[in-house]
Image 1 (spheres, one colour):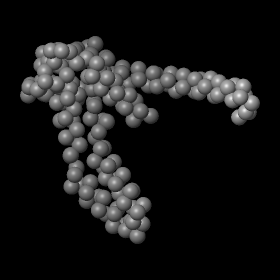
Image 2 (cartoon, one colour):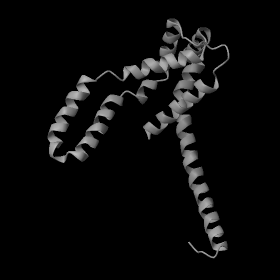
Image 3 (cartoon, rainbow, N blue to C red):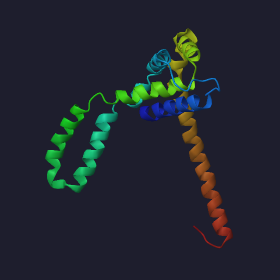
Image 4 (tube, rainbow, N blue to C red):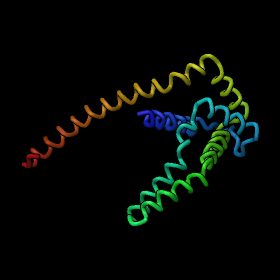
Amino acid sequence: MKRLVHSMLIAGFAALVIASAPAQAQNAPTPAGIGYAKEILALKHVDILYKDAVPNLVERVKLVLTQNNLNYQKDLNDVSLKVATDLAGREREIGEQLAKIYATQFTEQELKDLLAFYKSPLGTKSLQQEPQVFEVARQFMDEWAAKMSGEINTKFRLEMKARGKDI
């Protein structure tokens, strides 16, 4: 459930970045702009989305290798621990790139203003309320999808019946 809410947050974040790319936005972000972007991303807790990227990828690769090499299951388990340890921290590369991407979509001043907003009482409230807003929205979408699926199912059945085929 939390992963879905976080996924929705990042989708909203990505849509914001794409949709709000003004013509005057920088092509090459400045170090200060990247710094502001990092602060904004930290306030939005975006790292939650990728903090387990390395162990999750290691586990996924291990499972694939284990399916094809059942006789090496114990060894693959041991190796997965070593590989995860060796690659620990690499998920920070994602955060660095996200900050650069974010910083290319806004001018340095816009990033500074966004940061000021998120640090303001209203910005803080916005950050605190977003997860609840997205959770309520997700619940609505689930209910809507269930209702719509019922309508679609009924339409399929009626159309098939009109063709002389009961399903």
